[in-house]
Length: 223
Image 1: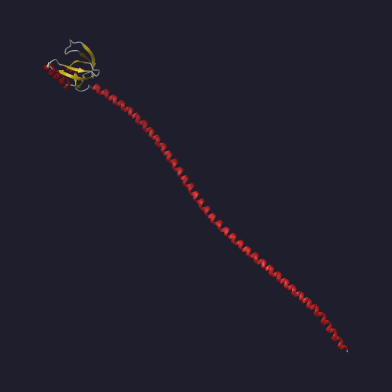
Image 2: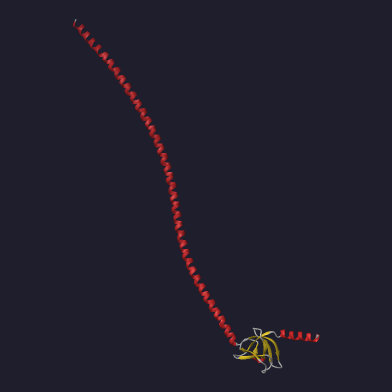
């Protein structure tokens, strides 16, 4: 029993040592049998290029024990296997890769078209933003000019208001001077009137006296 265990362990180790990948050769179908001879039962027909896992290789019988991807185990003549895929497998793989590359290329073209469209939109947006920036700059300059004009107008208004105040003060001064002149003129006329009245009274008193004296002298001359 102990020797049987060691024998089984040795066989299992040998099977693991041969656990490598092999492929069915040529463009044909080959029989996967239940034993290491052509008289054994056919388990499955394997197309060329089928991927198999090599479990054991018997040089004496010329058969190899293999396992399919579905887990089916059988025997196949070793001469129908090789350690590399057949050329058709490479061709199919190349076609698949080419198809994948074409799909990726189409996706890249679509992405490139989207990028170009986005770039065009970005250029248009950039142009619009540039125009808007220029317009805002112009509006800002106008606002600055308007503000400068407003400040200048305010300064001129203040100057005019100050001049109006000064003119009003001068006008008030002129009115006071005019009133003073008018008052002085009235006083002068009153004085002149008084003088004239005095002179009138004086001459009114003086002239009769002179006339009387003349008459008196005339009478004396007569005597």
